[in-house]
Length: 153
Image 1 (cartoon, helix red, strand yellow):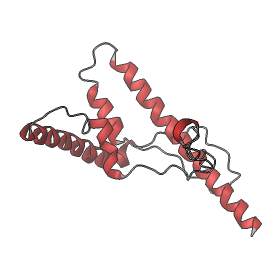
Image 2: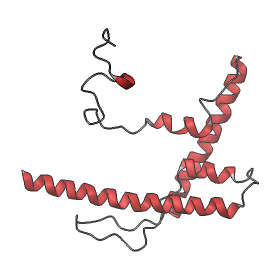
Image 3: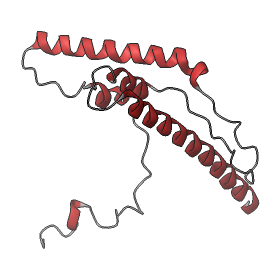
């Protein structure tokens, strides 16, 4: 440990703890489908097999993205955004629009036989409702921060 005085436990340099690090950034749009569709889970060793796998994964991702885009207006029941930092949360938070990941989960219901479909549909509904509620509260928090910054300047 003496030779590496700049490295502490966990391999972080001194002064680079969680409080000093930059905030996490959202993933690049090209990273969205990799984990959901298995683009990074190929174990093939030959180029034609790898190309076939990539093409099939990209077709599945494209189908889900087109479906999500087409269903966006029909599946979103979000309440109006908060107008002031003091707005009260709505009684019914609504549901966010279907996302690519959620459409993939719904398509996977066809092959899942160990649980009934209503179980998965319940969790889909819960997850979308929770995300809608979190979205509303994040927007209100941004309004509060903006109001606080305008008071301090």
